[in-house]
Image (cartoon, rainbow over all chains, first blue to last red; front, top):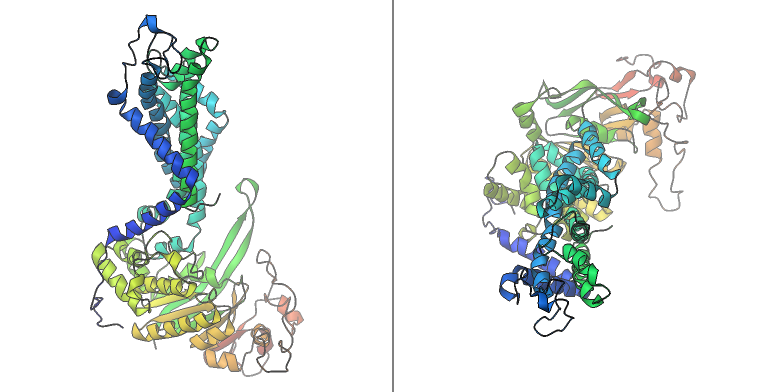
Length: 299
Length: 329
């Protein structure tokens, strides 16, 4: 079997990294596709995301220009499929433009919280001891407040604007992400391959990169995807309460707030932004569930 | 032959933390253990669960900090090395762990699991992979497995990966901590055979830790029997197996199920009682609470290490009285 003692093989196999990644991805997508609801949700979510991104091209009207003579049109009115609002602006166009901000406010805080909370959790879990106590107990302070109250408090302090919503929600999401990451790291740290890596003299950084992160990634990732829908609802909620995006900016929460005035005149139109918030949140949850199942994470 | 590795009076106890981090007591895991490993020989360590075998291995590997004692590698104490010197010694002593399902990273391919230790020691990735492949070949894994992930491997195959990973740094000493306990009997035999082949092929010295007396007998030149953190008997394997002296060793051998048809499976006098808590070990001889030959003297001082024959010692007061035996300590 062993041909020479130089550490070379007579016929070294070509190590194709892409092929390796490919097979893992294939396995993942095969399992995901088997999950019908998640797959359909992904398609629906994809349609929503793509159409909001393409809003400037596909939106039939300017979202900020309305004809006051044409206000409060019902669903299916001529030229305005989803009707018009109290200023005569086309609701479909506003939904498409508003989705950009709403979805952004759903995803960006989770990304930020995933990065910051994830790193804090990994440090706390890996180093343990004093570092763990300092990080985790500090984050526990945030748990003392209900999430929505904390978000309201922070955004009230920071003032209006989409950037402040994102900051506020990110802060709300950092502690739970850190907690998930910390408990996952603590579990992985007990495995013998970590000890084995330490006996080879590996540096902490490499152990974290190759042994810890790779093993906790899917758990933290799946948790984060489930948080996107909550973040989206939270952001819309803040805007609805007047703490986030200010009118006339198109954003689903703001639109819901504006349209609530006409609930007795035109109830179906009122519901539209809420419906979009609901569908987006639902599809995101279904897709996240699909990810979790496809990655075989026990909960 | 020269001793490649020596342990001198190694002790380790773990504090038990109570509420608010107060120390409630200590668990004496390893107490005053000395051993020596000859170049290219195999030292077997036996004892029941919780006797400190694995702790001893981790102390040698410096995974845990030792309280007292020295570990000399080629005459140099490795317990206070730091930096690049420690790194050099780490490469010389490698370990194979007990559980093959926990000891290899499920998210790295087989070859990267092995190559990781190399590229951590400054070998370029491609070169590390080539070398890893060579060692995977040496432990008898087909090349086609290299890019697979551990989930598609059986326990025996995983243990081969773990052995390849230990060998890839070209160590002189390999510590196998219950390396075959998690495997089926038939696979155990293959892996044991592999250990012996590799030992010859790469001129290794082995420390073989197991609770399985037959496995240790098959592997070892020297045997050390541990009980509750202490060495009760050590010596050449042949002598210990043919002529055990310490009552614990005798009881241990008597509890090996008999293979004879018609005989009762357990020969006689199985060890009575439970292992005492290491938080509060018995005074004097730690085995006295379960020893069938216990005397009043046992509760007093620590039992002396009595030399039964050259290189064969037993820590028991029973042999102290035997006239012309030399008392070591």
